[in-house]
Image (cartoon, rainbow, N blue to C red; front, side):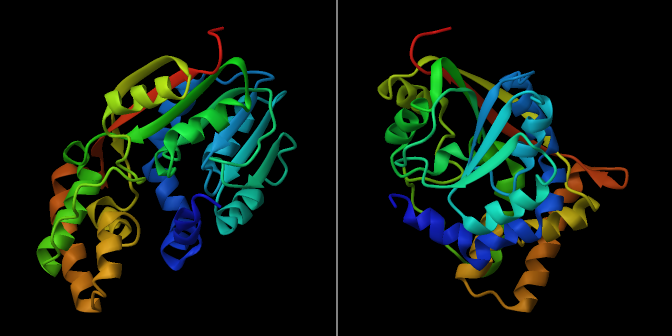
Length: 280
C-alpha cells in the first residue's frame, strides 16, 4: 500500500474519533457538502465515484440524487467503511470498496468523481489523479473540495493557536506533503491536473459558514477531539487540566461567531473541477 501512513492514521484512535463524532461533524460541514453536490450536478442515472468517502455522508447524499444511477464509495480505512455501509443500508444503488485509490485498479465508466476533502491526502497526487481518471468515462468530471489557507479558516486556525499557546508547542515546519491543507494553493492543484493529463481545470473559491451544534461551547468541544488542536493535545500528551483550559480558550475565540444560541464560523474552501480525456 503506497499510502500506508494514511491507512494507519484513519484506523487509529485518532482517526476513529471522526466516527465517534460523525453526526456533529456532518452538521458542521453541511454547507460544504451542499456546495460539493451542487457543483457536481448529480442527476438521474449518473455513475458516481466518491473518493475518501469516510463514514459515507457524501456517498449517501449522492445516491439519493442519482436514484437510477450508482455510487461507489472508496476509502483507505476499514472502520470508516464499516460505518458507511451501516448508514447506506436500504439504498440499493450504493456500494463501498476498501482500497488505496492512488494505485489500485478501479472499475471504469463513472460519469463523475466527487470528494469532500479526500483528494489532498495522497502521497503522489499526480499518480492518484491519473489512476482515478482511468475510472471515468471519456470527458467524465472530477469535482472535489479542499481547504483554503489556514489564515482564512478560523475553524482550523483558532483551535491550533490556542493549543500551541497553552502547550508551548512550536509551529510545524512547512511541508509539501499530504494533509488537509496540501491543496490550499489553487495554482499548485491546477498544475497537478495538467501534469496528470486532465483538462478543463477550474477552481471556485467559496466562503461557507460552518455550523457546529451547541454554540461556541459545542464547537470548542468538537475542536479538541478532531482537527489540529486535537492532534497537538494528543502528541503533547496533554493533561485533563490542559484540555479544559484549551477548550475554554477556544470557546472564547469562537464566541465572536455566535448568532443567537448557535454559531456560524466562516470558512474558505476551493471547489475544484476538471475532466478526464477529451472534453465532453
